[in-house]
Length: 322
Ligand code: PEP
Ligand code: MG
Image (cartoon, rainbow, N blue to C red):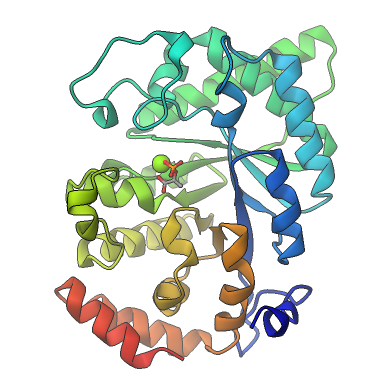
């Protein structure tokens, strides 16, 4: 099986009829670059920057971050590398920040909400990213955006960081692409407005499912409810892609669902442009992709969007699976 899949390593990710998408990898730390490249990943769709902040007793400096981002950018050459700004809080705690306990951490003070209030955290990261952007094809992505105001405020911080770097005479990429995660239902509903303000979206199904179905992603007792096959989630995905394409921006997916073989024809047919997954899934997904034409997948998507239950969706997808 692994031997057979290796044949797809250097092939472009495309359907039977030559429709191209991007198959890229998710990273949690620097070492992950190797398996992504070994498995034929065409770039990095999500670099979770949290690891830089964990297992230590203080915030990483701009310089430390710059070195790491630069290294990833250089290792990936001209392949795209999407680095997500700090997504702390929820399931990802940083002891040294000493935030108060919360009743509902997943609905609390986290990610972009923290960064927008704390220049001492956000600015060094943005400056490091902008500077590293001169060494490869880096893109910046904001997590947990729930409103247009937050997105505009985050973009403003990027402009401030650029102005500082310019003033200081430091080298940086002034044209770096900016994107945001779509992982909160509010963002899906205003995706048309948000799409005008960014270069790309990436759908984070892990959180989008949690917030759409009101099911804690960490709670094993209800883990069965945390599924991308829920019709409400599928419609969220479809609406996001449609809104993005209407504004001529591309959409990726970096939640676990992007690497699900069974879901592939739906995502492809709905128009997803980029699939970001753990390295181990890349070759398999590249292979499955070659079994479908775009118009066949579009038929599947249409059909799936008319189904009413998780069971019906799964039964149908299993029946038409190639
Ligand atoms: C997601 O929410 O789907 C996602 C990719 O981000 P994380 O799992 O890091 O929250
Ligand atoms: Mg998330």
